[in-house]
Length: 424
Image (cartoon, rainbow, N blue to C red; front, top):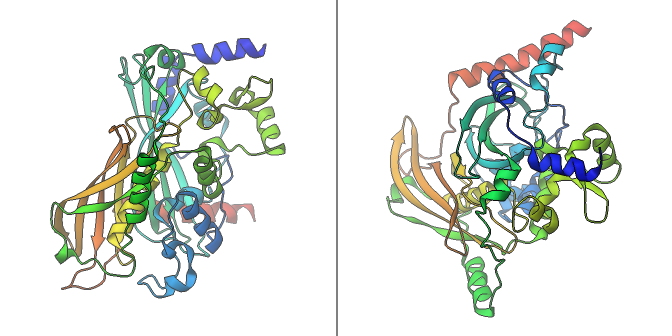
């Protein structure tokens, strides 16, 4: 097939009922992760590189000596660092499972739409983390406001555990599968023009950077927090290609894509030719390049490259951890991707305390967060729950995972050990 024919096929690809049915049959079945994890072991450097990639200079993520002075007694990872670790010990699929898990929604656009996180334990240098990956939900919309056509929202869950099988975190991430032609014809972003900044506008952005507050080692006690308190904003942008590259420095190329430079790209192209298309110079390059390639984005009906949704989830996490301080714990964070964050856009992350309560033995606050563009568009709303130290009770107690997660974590380790014994 010629390159132009392949490109036309990609643009005209449709969501089929067979793919929808098979996606639903995948729910709850552990799936072997064929892509290698970016970090096989957590280390001081990789923890620091990840925080660098999201623009978070909190010394708790970077300096082991500083970490010793905190309640954690060591350097710990920023919350979403978990996306870079997690050895997969799920058995390779049987022929029946291979048929079940073969590629879905081929050549259809796949857009990150949101994430739900829950954290139970910190990740520290030297930790080996294991993960299990399953589909947990599939929803179909026949006339989506996103494209005007059929879309499928599929949600995947990653369970991260330590070597004892103790749950460290869960991560549910959702994607919108949308027919590219419908996206191109919807015209939703036709009026978009890349932002041009005046000197005064850049000075305003600089002033927000300068005013950023990090609570650090000064404890924020639950008793001192009131409903209606606002979080000091965090600014990200104007978005550049450098910012996307910075994310990749700490994140790799993501657990979904598994691409890489030079020979790695060649090997992937031989294995997955449909993931590549020729650029305007005839060079095969990854579909993923719409995050940095202006021409590719426009070919797919988008006015400009845009960020990864995971970047905004990280940025909102940065906002919260700045506010709560190093002695607190980010327990839950849920975000949605409501609009694209295009190159040149500036994102202001803000938040407000909406509730405070005692949950068992933990003193918690609930926070509403938002990522808002310079156009005033809320591109990523979200909610968070934070555990704070108490003047009455002292240091925080880490959250207890649900019984089902604890049982699954223990069984993950037991089943993996049994498979190793059977090979001896």
